Image (cartoon, rainbow, N blue to C red):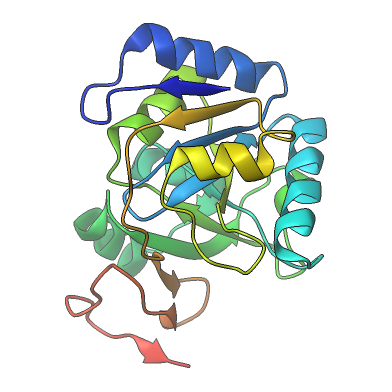
Length: 210
C-alpha cells in the first residue's frame, strides 16, 4: 500500500495511520534525508524479526545490522551512552545525514544489539521520519531500501513493486536522490570514520580513519 505524505509538512492524520500500523507490528518504508528507509517499532520483537528476515531477503546476508532512528539528541541519550565529546559533536551535526555508532544502554532491546553491544543511531533531517518517531513515541528500527543488486532505491513505487509483499505501508514522500549516510563510531576513545557518505566530517575535532 502506497500512502502519499507531504514531505515538508506531513499530514498528522496520515502519520497517525502509519504509526498505528507500526504499533500493530507492521513494517513501513519512508523517506529520509539520505535514502528511503524500511523500519518497524524497536519494541515489537516480532516486527523486528520480520524486518531482519526482509533484510536477509534483500541483502542476502545474516549479518546486516539494523540501525534505528531517534527524534533528537535527548532521545539518543536514553538508548546510548554519549560521552561529553560525542555530545558536543552530535549537537552540532544533528539532525543530519549521519549514523553514529554508540554503546547501547539497557533500554535497547536484546534483538537490536550486536556482539559489541553497540547500536547505530540516526536523527535524519526529514520531517516525515521525525514525525513518525514523534507520533509513535519511541525509535524505529531502520535499514536502507536497496534492490537485490545492492543499489539504493530512490522512489516508493519501486519499493512497493519489489517488497510490497513484506511491507505494510510505503510512504510516498517523493523521489529521493539516494546517498548513504556518513557513519562515525563514537563508542571508543576516539571517533572513527567507518564510511564517508553524504555528511561532512570536517568540523570534528579529531576523527580516526580506518
